Length: 77
Image (cartoon, rainbow, N blue to C red; front, side, top):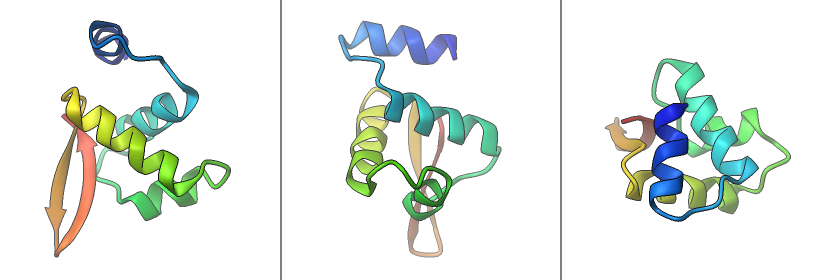
């Protein structure tokens, strides 16, 4: 989580609850997750918000995309 906080600050981003939730879910899962799986875990968070959080976290190298059977899944970088 220290890496998360450092990179968020380094890129002048806000530490929002959706970003933190998505990142924490990926850390805790131990395996790559799809947007659908994240949505099931956080049903109160809009799918678009999850997608944007993943895009941002990917841009700052906190998560990476893992193609599995023609599907995109995400894991901690």
